[in-house]
Image 1 (cartoon, rainbow, N blue to C red):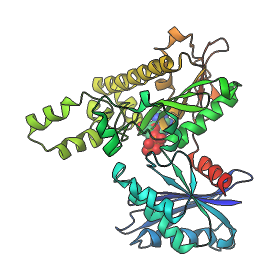
Image 2 (cartoon, protein in one colour):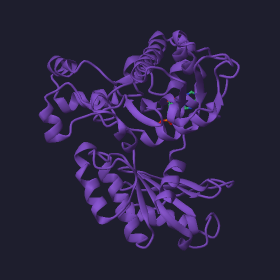
Image 3 (cartoon, rainbow, N blue to C red):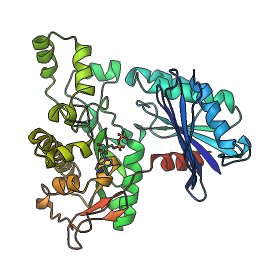
Length: 395
Ligand code: ADP
């Protein structure tokens, strides 16, 4: 079956058409600047990227253009839309309502709307994508795959915050966690690669991209994760602060005469390694700057790696052990220095990195030595494939 996977943001839309039998992407693409002007980058498998500049005033227009590109005589990959058997939608927040992926019905759409409060930037955009596909392909079954669903197995001791319980009851303030599709995909691959029995396995997955999170996966289930009610908690990220003393918010607001919204904007967009280094949120820039002698760039990278190592240590405690640590996403897959630097804190677990094996990029591989007690894996994430698999499984 051919599955169209849609990841809809507020002004962008990423898509892949995946053949579920071969598990290969037939085409990948990105619509940008929706509602501003509009640009569609479409790449058929094995072909050249095509850039289509056409006005996209709404997401529906964008999806219409995507469907045209997929069926185009020159750069299309299917003859007619009838070949699309299902659509899988990435949805950011499923709250406590959705503990797994689900076939989209009117009731499910209402349920996703009810979670808008928890992800006001993301869920409404995801819904726009769902509604646009529904009106353009009314007879094609659709599935919602939630970023939060994998973490719904966390026990209360991991998801509750130390604040009045009534806020959990009234507003559902708790840890939800994100990147769930990636953590689940990577943990499953790690279990296979290392040859573990899923029901007797302890994996820590480090999803280190621009947004970054660490998850403890015990017997294939998420039992703790570093992101919280929102994706701001946990690791230091590209531009996000990660966990800080909550009192800092009031402190900055008073000192700098700023509103809470302004301080939150700083914590989301101007902090992390960008804020620390004053150079960039991109680790490639940081490494270049550090090589050129920029001390703050070097420091930002150190602070980042130290925090990752601390989370890993705490999750080893949460699971009372660990069999494998898996690195994924832009940085985890590509940056050997970060992997080595994080692993250097973990010698007490019997971890040793094989520096030659670690000298790889974007390839599934075990990078620890043969006799390392805990295996260290590099596993490129593939959220789109995971969404396609879930979609096929459900319909
Ligand atoms: P997101 O999907 O959260 O936007 P990504 O998973 O694409 O983020 O990760 C982006 C990060 O990965 C950036 O900090 C970037 O520097 C880093 N990255 C990507 N490629 C490389 C590379 N070849 N070497 C080092 N870091 C890389």
